[in-house]
Amino acid sequence: MHYKLIGCKIFEREIASITYQCKNQIDVTLLRQKLHNRPQKLQKTIQTAINAIDEDNDPYSNAVSEAPFDAILLAYGLCSGAVNGIGSKKYPVIIPRVHDCISLFMGDRIKYEEYYKNHVGTYYYTPGMVECCDAIRLDDQWEQRYYFHLKRFNGNKKKAQKIVEVEKGLTENYRSLAYIKWDELPFSEYEEKVEKKAKEKNWTYDLITGKNTLLKKLVDGEWDEKDFLIVPPEQYAIESYNEDVITLMDEKD
Image (cartoon, rainbow, N blue to C red; front, side):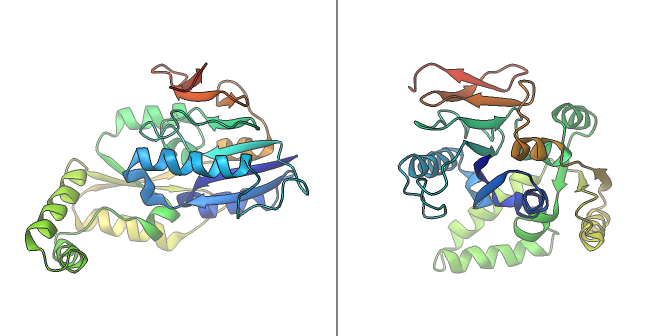
């Protein structure tokens, strides 16, 4: 089978570790992680990528006439509603029934939900999060962040300070750090880095053993109804507000 996978760049190492030995042919496009900060823009970017595939105009794929796709796979969860309205005119779209990426890193939605309930205030790290989007900063790093924004906004002190305060507000409720480790991706230096940061902030630290279960099932084509929504051509996904997480809507609003 030949699948097109569109996913978050936060999964770059994880997806690579799975696809290189997958029995299916997986054509991968990864979108920048910071799109999560603006869910509507993320939704538009995902849908634009799908539209390009529908029109055989995707610059990251070979011509469909040479290698037609059997389905489009999304390495995304609901992600603050970013998959609402997502669908293809030509291909089935397969979406994991998870709220966010942490379930995919853990390999089990229920495992994450149970951990979340018992560990409120935890910020999660993975290899990709250590490498590209570390939002938890030490006290002396906020001054560096201020000067970064000061330069970004051409010396506007008020705007730079406002952005810093917003960034601080997004992390002020955290009191624990956790690193999600896959056995296939051992990065002891990343584990040590996160543990050290937790100690420096006087926070608790936890090492979680994740699994590739959900992402592997996604690329292997093992789409059971419990874990995945199959969106047929010319139909669209929408949040279900129940344990299914996402469901189908008959017509796009």
